[in-house]
Length: 268
Image (cartoon, rainbow, N blue to C red; front, side, top):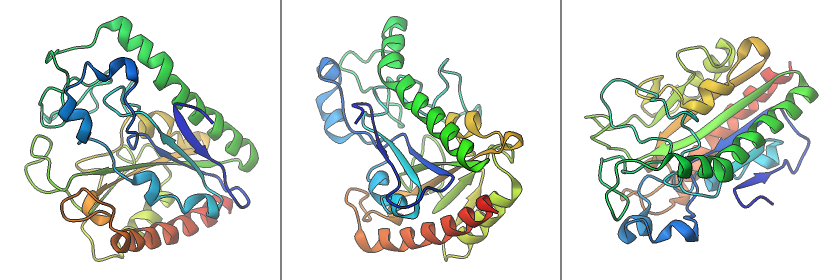
């Protein structure tokens, strides 16, 4: 098993869906630990906590699950490799190798404002490229087998992050890069299922998909990509610190129903 990521193959017959969980990692390499503020890496506030656990039902449905092991503060797997901003609306955007958290507070002891380019390249080589190589390899395998494939990018965020949005986030935010990363049918099924719950649902706002969704979603080539961002209180406690089994069960049932419909469409 890779040191950089965890790849869980289906326990039953495979279906043409790959789940990617790029922000659940909590590891900080030993050679970098002393560079970070100790209190920061003790909390890792920007982590998509427990999202890999939330989706752990997927392999039993035939879905492949790929999840990161290292923290996004080491390198952010959902940013462009050349560190171009994903949004230009004034929100705080952490970079490929972040130097602040979402609130704009330093995460390094020396409050550095950038990472040396040679160090960025080293981290890309060690952590970024292996994850993306695995995405490409798995998508190719599934598309060779089925003719079409869906990459579902899994995320979560605190209910309220004022540096990104002045209001609390909706419960569920589906991103398809403004309609360019997936076929309308896949998006419509998912929106219908998400909106069928008594939850606040948004489409492409305030998140329309990061680098993974935008880069790999090529519906004309039968490679589709969707991103689901969810407020953490949907599966964690009100303090957004602990996994909440009852809340998680409800979200899992919703996700299972949705994947069942998506699998039917993809195999048709």
